[in-house]
Length: 212
Image (cartoon, rainbow, N blue to C red; front, side, top):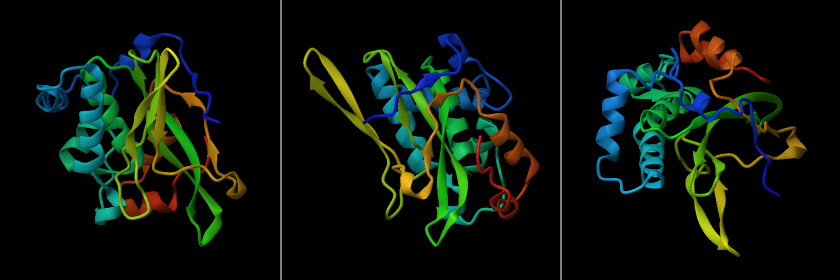
């Protein structure tokens, strides 16, 4: 059974609003978005292109052993890497720059199967698909062996289309993992505080948020 998502704000405009973290009005962010989608033929194409670019072209900090901890979308773009939360900030800013409403979702995951009692938050996005009339989740963490996130697929169902998501981490309830259903219009303050308080990857890993 698919997760029933819930909006934190009923106003679609709130999911397009720039902020200090989701700085979709930053000139570099806007220019990057436009250069990537200039040949897209639909908003779905735009969303797919931007998602796959952030997933593949922006490294996950731990995968490359980077030390810095960017937070704002423009900082992630400049650094070329980010934690899952930060990559979600950049993807949201790029999508919002193109007029595609985007929010933030979170999961509670086991950090390492060898330490099943340690849980951490994981950040991803939800994007409004106007053609489907619904929100879909996208995880731009970055693929590696054992982690394979995709834009997902649409399939016909009667007179409508059904979207099948493919996230990086399917939830395992037996380990206490949780899919939080809320789509936030801005990154959760707990996440932003963690990124802005711990300036190195090592420090952040030691103090990753564990719950919303």
